[in-house]
Amino acid sequence: MSQGTNGQGSAGVSEHNQALIYETDLPARLDRLPWSRFHSLLVLALGITWLLDGLEVTLAGSVAGALKDSPVLQMSNADIGLAGAVYIAGAVLGALFFGWLTDRLGRRKLFFITLFVYIGATAATAFAWNLWSFLLFRFLTGAGIGGEYTAINSTIQEFTPARFRGWVDLTINGTFWIGAALGAAGSIVLLDPDFVGSETGWRLCFGIGTILGLLIVFMRLWIPESPRWLLIHNQPEAARRIVETIERRYHERGIALPPPQGKPLRLRARDHTPLKEVFRSLFVVHRVRAVVGMSLLTAQAFFYNAIFFTYALVLTGFYQVPSAQVGWYVLPFALGNFCGPLLLGRLFDVLGRRIMISATYFISGALLAVSGYLFEQGALDVIEQTIAWMVIFFFASAAASSAYLTVAETFPLEIRALAIAVFYAFGTGLGGISGPTLFGALIETGERSHVLVGYLIGAGLMIMAALVQAIWGVAAERKSLEQVARPLSQAGD
Image (cartoon, rainbow, N blue to C red; front, side, top):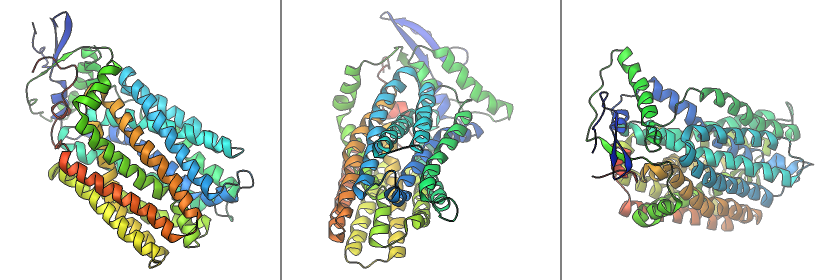
């Protein structure tokens, strides 16, 4: 029989059918918190992962010309596309492996492990001695980043109050483009023959991520484990202490906290979730949500990776932009991508997920189809092409960010990291690996009409995903994670 909550309104323990039951209001206490310095620092220390991914992807594109000219690597356009696909393959497998570990071992352990994998691999890339070593280190770099996505998305969502979750998640994903801008700026300087030169410059470019990664290690040292994860892993007292520590900061500043909303949760303790239950939850109980998540992630993965991993080839091959100057064209591109989630993010919490996600996907696809046709007709010069990409990705960036938001918040707590990993892996595997490879081959032909085919495929996938979201999407705005997806360990009603 349940004892109810303890004196702090936190977590009580009972024996029910020989199973340990926790009655807790800790998730509700986290959701009622006003935004504070704690949340800002958490978002900064963890959300910087997207900055690293943006840096890596941009460097791969910005140094493409230097890699082709390198007397050591001597890469072709197809090799550049292959390198992008290998990076994505690493991210897919890293997400699956580290996502499983994140749900088993905890959020905090894994966002350090994955960061160290990234740091070591991107540092090694700078010392690549042939094509195959370069591809291996890019694979391992991707594995670190893929693992980061699962651990970081889970942690941020489980700490962020429900009413801010959409805007926060989209804005964080948008910082990918701050990393893109850093990569572009770094490549402009380091590939300049008057400063460093292409052969040494592309190696130094990959050192940027190493330095940033080492700084991030220290930024994350103070971050606690997710109380929600601790609750379902038989550690209610540790969860209570973390929440009380956060609340104490408000009390010390004289800020009164409103009472938690709703009834306390009753959770059955477990040390892990069997894989059979994981897959039953993902593909049977929540199969409609699985279709939505798969559609959104596959479409945005093809759309983004196909275009962004090969944009430098379009600029150099069709617009005769010198490879050392490609970075200048990335900066406005990155600005549009960052501003999209930042300016549209609040609407995902106000107007709702279903409307905003389907709208941003549809607009992105329609605009890409139009600009692709103009590109094929030769109607755009390089400046106009860059402006077109800027406008398209203003909407596409918000759309892509919302895909990660969707798969992170619409599946139960016990399998959240693995759900992110599974749909990221399948979606990115289908769209992210095929996209760069296909576009690299299409660009290699030198025919604009062939490249248009790739653009139309990307546009079609985005429009179909918009329709799937409009019909079956979940209205998760301003709801607690436990309301959106009932925990597998929840006991009773």
